[in-house]
Length: 37
Image (tube, rainbow, N blue to C red; front, side, top):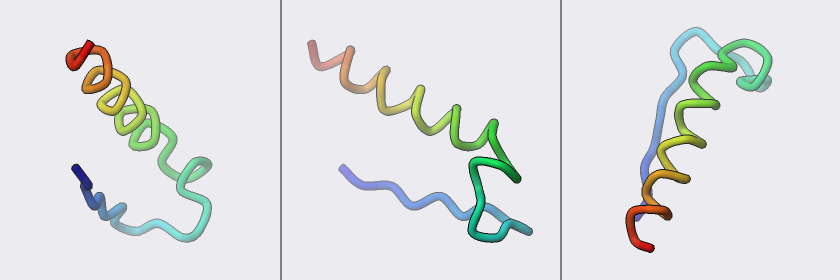
């Protein structure tokens, strides 16, 4: 399943400008994979 997240007021360096957004997205993917077992 795909998901689009729009980072408001952000340029091309999302990992620098909004690191928590990136961390949260990665955690969501990891949790989804773990839930499927």
